[in-house]
Image (tube, rainbow, N blue to C red; front, side, top):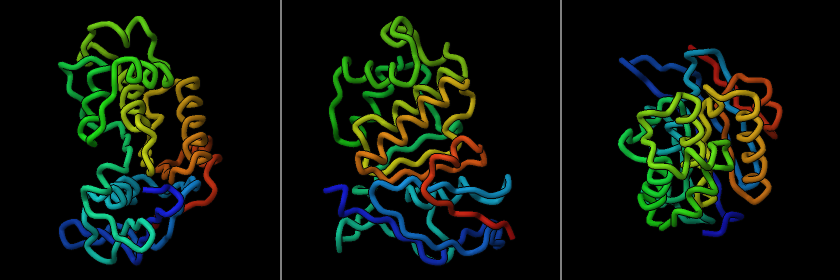
Length: 214
């Protein structure tokens, strides 16, 4: 898939839980090279919208479509094209950082050797001595685990990046790494969504989708 032919369009998207919509209808279109922030009060539904874009949740009303030119992408096409990071994303505690990144790449139908997996983990600030060791993720701190989640999302240069509070549990240096990588991905043609209320993250966005709670 050529990145320049990809688009994501939402029309009147809402999600209901226990028969109650949690935010006002949302419509937007995103194209390659854009960084789009998703903002709103805590509990307004930012993470829910990210999951709808990722095709993890189905909207209760409206539609959200990925298109490669005039062709609508199916669930498999979306899965292979997206990189997703959130502090609630589960990791396999028995794996090493390198094994976790390789596993995610293989789930997308791609192979990644140890050298490439180590390089991407190091880019997000995990030291070589730790990343290249046999230390299991169960022994990692919350900040170290978040670095691995970011590496998983950015590995293989996905066409779409969904960053849901991606800098949670990171220090200032770690946050700067994530934002720099997000800008680099957009420069290379990826569509980047950032769900956040953090001023530093909002500052790199080209435009904003504001979620309004009901």
